[in-house]
Image (cartoon, rainbow over all chains, first blue to last red):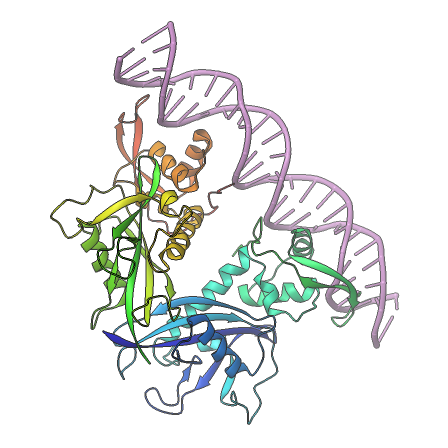
Length: 225
Length: 225
DNA sequence: GCAAAAGTGTTCTTCGTACACCCATGG
DNA sequence: CCATGGGTGTACGAAGAACACTTTTGC
């Protein structure tokens, strides 16, 4: 049996201290007028990860510098798309706060929406995208515990305070700044001190860091909620 | 673009203190004579999880009592199957030690193979099944840390010592029996004391337990390797 | 009695949490 | 001066690691 295969993207970022997802407004049926996750068909001869990267670049209008992209899960319920059998390989992307999609670009129809708002009661999202978004958010929350992926939400150079506010936005609660500082600076391979300083956050100037090369955190940060 | 979609299964169990995977010997090209993961095409109107459950039942010849089944990852490199574009949704199953596949049954061609042997150097497996198996084993190892899924390898009633030997087989190293005992019996919702006892393991009779209803372990067991 | 496995107690150390306190800037 | 955020020190308690020790069976 032959089916169509698409990739759908859960692209997360932090804007104004809130976890946000990139959504597009559907212009044609089915689900016309509803929000949907960006995505598209896998092309001939194209690997899944490659298709996801292509869609990500098209929708955000950026190169993939510093953006984390991974496969999330595949959704293939028989009637998830009323037009026919479509299996979608969902991917999760974590991106720094990108400039808003510009009018006139490919991504003009895309908008950042607060995750809380997108998942609020009521069928706001097309297809099974509410489930996909919820799975993506849960994956992101849990990956921040045992990987250094919080840095994927930050610009190339960032302060410990900025990184902490990322974790606070994703997990939805306050973290003790003193203990967080000790934890991340003491975790080998997590952060690299650039030697630079900034006072853009106010108060005493803070050290600037780049992400380190570790993939896993030992011991993990704890959500503690 | 239309493609074929299959489900492939990484079915793990413990036999003779070793982590084993169920493999089938391919009788037709491509990769004729090589080992492969069991699997098959997703049928019309069939959900992915349902297809995986059907294949699992067919290959093991058992109902799904106590067997854990979850989606693993999707593999869709353009040339992973020389016959054409095939995307496979791999699933991971953890099963208690099942009776050996009987001659004459659907699963007569299937055999339990040690994971170490299946992943040893040299191209023993068909397609990209070596990668899929490696991903499945890694998923299983890591899930045993923070979920009570070690019990999925055990019969309905089991002793703490039997459960410990499961962890030792999966992680490949010894665990202190005294600390392990305290850890699992003290973890709320992990184990339920049936009141029964057995001396099938020799030595002092051990309490028999059933799995509890928790899905997550707080705090996790640690691999510590 | 001896071997083997179950189960308990104790000690040491590591690590998370809470919070007092000092530092360096802007206004 | 004060407010704001950066960064360090310390004390308490929970949990992991190591291991001595007792219990209950089979042989």
